[in-house]
Length: 204
Image (cartoon, rainbow, N blue to C red; front, side, top):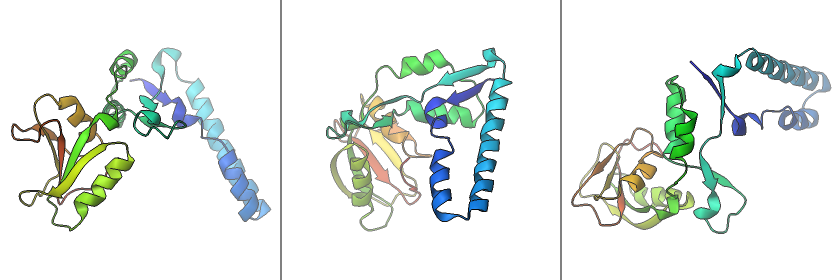
C-alpha cells in the first residue's frame, strides 16, 4: 500500500515556530533539549521517507481553491475543496490507496461554497441553534437563505435537497461529520436544507 505525503501539511513542520517561543519563555537548557528533540524527529521523518521505494511514494496536494470565490474581500487565503478533501482524508484514515489522477480530475470543477444556498432549521431543541449554525456556515462562505424551526424534533442531523441539487448538498454534507444527505420532493426549491438535530457536533 502506498504512502501519501501532503506537501502543504509538511512544509510548516519546521523548528522555527518552536524555536522563538522556546527562546522567549524557557530556560536555555530546556529550550536546547526541546529543539534537539524536534530536530531528531525531523531527521527521523526524513530518513524514513528516503527509505521508501520511489514507486510507492506519491505526493499529493489537498484539493483547494482561492477563498476569494466565497468571500470576495479575501484574496490571500485558500480553502479546502469539498467533498473532495473530505473523501481524500477518509481514504487515508481507512488506509486505502488513492488514485492521484482521479483526485486531480475530481478537483477540476469545484462547487464553491458561495453557490450553495442553505436554509438552516433547528430540530435540536436548543434555542437559537439554527442562527448560530447559520452564522458559522456564512463565515465559511455559504449563502444562507434563512433560519427557523424544523417541523418537529430531530434526533439526527440531516441535509435534504430537491432534485438537481445533489452536488450542492454533497458539498455541505461533507462538512458535517456523520451526516447523510437525502433527496426530498418537498424540499425548498433551489435550496439545500440543513436540519440541525440533537446529535449535531459542528462543522469541519
